[in-house]
Length: 171
Image (cartoon, rainbow, N blue to C red; front, side):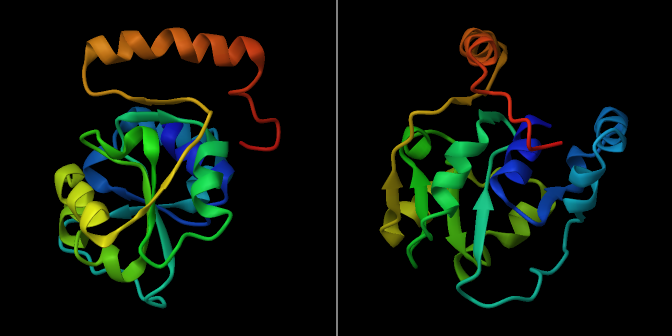
């Protein structure tokens, strides 16, 4: 849920989420956040890539990550280069945070819509396509298991205490 909120706060007008991530807890949370609920589009396996210009940017945020909105804004805001951009801290991991043109997203679409992991394919696409590495000083944690979740708690608490994880402008 945090990734969805961060994407919304970063300026994503539509947030496409695989339907296999939809459950009662997510629905309850969305009911409390109308702006986020309005932005979410549930993807069913086999759904088609929505129409749009080939250079339209798509922000890809792994569900199993904690990332602050300013980091995502840094990927989007200065305008992603035609070959895309990737958060440097996530580039070597299993699930990079990236912005890609719609045309490149098409190569991953069937897996994205089905909610199956795309990390290795995305990493290869970014590497082979010459995606720009973008540094960030904000909080990013890839949460792949319970150990990483425990590791993520300390920086999240520090960010909350310092106020850097709180954004009064969002939902």
